Structures are given as C-alpha cells and as structure tokens.
Length: 327
Length: 189
Image (tube, rainbow over all chains, first blue to last red):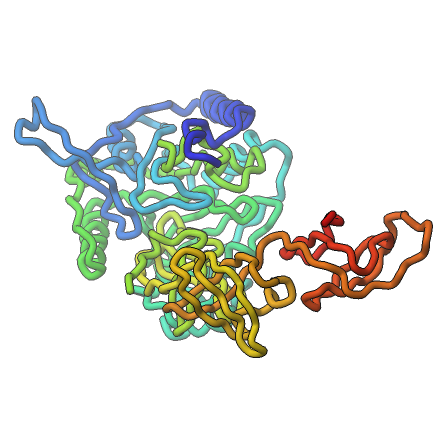
C-alpha cells in the first residue's frame, strides 16, 4: 500500500460495525447482571510494578503540580477499581483504554481496550462461569468448554511438572520440543522458561474450537491473586483461551495489605535485577486494602481480541481503526 | 557491522546467525499478558536458501549481515565462472555455480540480474522475472491439435526445459516466467 493511503483505517467498516455490536452486547450483559459501570483515571502518579509490563508516561504541569509531575498511563484499571471495591461499590465493571510500552505485533497494539470487572462474594469458578456466559453471549453458539490446571496443561502438552522442574530441565524440554534457538536463550528466571513453553508448546495445543480455562498458576506467577490455602504452590489465578488465543486473566483478589506490599517490593527487586526502572508503590491501594477489600474475584479481558474472535480476524489491525503506525 | 535489536525486526532485514547470513521472512511478537515477550521469526539462510525458525527473547540483539542487492548485467560464462558487470561503474565480478544456482538455466548475455552480495562476494543471482529464449528442440507435435491439454517439453537455448503448447515449434522465441518456470507466450521477432 502506498504511503498516501495511510490515512485510511486498517479495519473494514463492516468490521467496525461488528465491533460496535460487541461493545453493545457487553453493555447489555452487565446491565442485565446488575453490575455497575464505573470509570477511573487513565493517568496515575503510580505506574505498574509488574516486571512484565512497561508503563508509558506523560507530564502534567499546572495547578496541583506547578513544577510538573510524571503521570503514568494505566496498564490496567485494577488498582483504582479495587479502591472503589474497598469503598463499598459492590460489583463493578469498566471498559477502558490501557497502554503498554513495547507491545506491538499480530495480536498486540500499545494501546488497546480492556474490559475489567469485579464480583464480591464470587469464587474463582463462579467468575469463570460468568466469563463463559459473557463469551457465549458475545460470540454466540454454545462452544465446548474445558477447565484444567496449569500443571495439567503442561503435563498433557509436554509431560513436565511446571511446579517442580528446574530451569535446566525446562530448557531441556524446550530444546526437545523443537523450539528453535532454545539452546541459545538466556532467560532471567524459571517463569520466563515457563512462558516460553506456554506460548510455543502449550497454547497451540489448546482446544482449537472452544473455550479453555487454565487455572491454578504457579505461586511465582500469582501477580495479584491469592495463593490457594490448601496448596500454596499455586495461586487462584486463571487465564481464558478461546481457539488457543489468550483472552482474559482473572484472580481471586489478594486482600492482605502486608502481602500486597511484599509483592510490590518483590516486583521492584525483580525490576532492579533485570535493569528495569523501579516503580513507585501505590500507597493509596495499600491504604484501601488496610481499610478492607471485600472477598472478591476479578478478571480483565482483551476486547480487541474478542472482536477478532467474533469477526474471524487474524490480526488486531483488522479490528481497530488506526493501529500504532497510523495513529 | 551494526547490531539490530528485536524491535527492529521486519521482513527483509539481513542478520547474522551461527556465522551465516539470513533474511527475515516473518517476525511474530509473542507475549503472555503477564509474562516474558519473545520474537518468533522465520528466516532464510542466504547461502543455502533453507528456511528455519528461531525464537529470540524480546530486546535481545543480533549482528547485522552486510548483504546488499544490486542490479548487474550478465556478461559471459568462461566455463566455470559467471561474469557480471555493474551498469554504471562498469565494475566486474565473478560468481560461481553455487551462487548462480537455478538462475544459470535462464540467463543470457546482456540480461540484467539482481546479484546479492555478502561482504562484497556474490551469494545469489536472481534472474529477470521474465526472459525471452529460443527453442532449440521440441517434438513437432500433432498437426491440428490446438487444444490446451498437456503440452510438450521444449529445450531452450540456455538448456532449460519448459512445457509449451503443442503448436509451438523449434526455432521460435518464447517468453518464460522464471519464478515459476512456466511458458507465458510466443514472441514475434
């Protein structure tokens, strides 16, 4: 395509219409479920500490910050939404734009639409049921659904125990599985090796026509999920795959302020050792948890990928009007 | 030579890997929402033509390959080497059978080819997409049979053998698509 044409959208207009129908279906689903729609700031004084997420930033100068202050663009609305939950909001949902530096590819754009919702009183499997109901509402039909643990998924695809295997063992599995260049890779930790095997070997084997829920992630990948009381090697975290595409990530939310602070500190320690900038810890979230987060589960779902699935698109560029290169 | 980070990866980029020059065919960014990012690439070995896959950790770097593609005129073959000349600088260079590869069966003196140079040495030769060559030998064919079915083999002046329609005869000029090796049309002198 010639340069003169790059003012045009990359998505066809009928696909943008299908996108609008997906958004309307989401609004209808939550209205019917009695979940409150909320909005929280896209810009925050605290960025994400997660070492796997790079925050974009901007500057604000004016009343409230006469000398100028760095504001971080949200990588997800999670922390602000938990403050609403602690304030007694009850069940809430939000559809918002989130931003992640360094992410661009067939299924990635540095800004994308995230659907995030929280359900006080739900167990992890209650929330999984609701995610599946939403997917059936948006995608139609009655797709086959399967739930398995992270350990079962690895066992089935690779015959390896992801909770116990050493780095050397995981690398050997990667080489044996034929991941080209695995013998040359230098990865920071065990979890990066698990990510390599997950993306290259486990995901491609997930149900090609249905919904797969992988749950009980290793404790080292708990992020903001609670560890399971009866099996502390795993966290009450789940990921939803549809036709092998990673679509949503959910937690039984961590409510313990002291444990949350330890996780933030651990994130920053990993950032230091990886040579990444340390991020300011969100004191307002910790104060909210101190005040008391209701027992709840929450999930974040990539809306652009949902539209890809609804329309049969192969690339994210087919479902957004103006991706990075045309922004 | 320079260094490329995975963020610079795109189709056509020339990189060094295990001592050989490669061209990137396809680059896929793969990242779990809460995990390590990877670049999964399909690359062509420019010496052997073989296509392989390779996974890099995002942010890793690789050495750039000093590979350039340049238009050169084919002059002659001395029995072992193919001689080419740059049309503007008149600089000449020679390529061996490995570098010339399949192009040998299509090119004639004066044809302008794309010569791929690695550190100044020819690595490959791409013939023009279309060439016009004369038929030195083909069966006379059955008179009156002009149906499209089948066709017959014809040997060209360069030694290449292509399938041609039955009505095409020895001594005629034909146009051939070198990318597919298929007959396109007859050409009037």
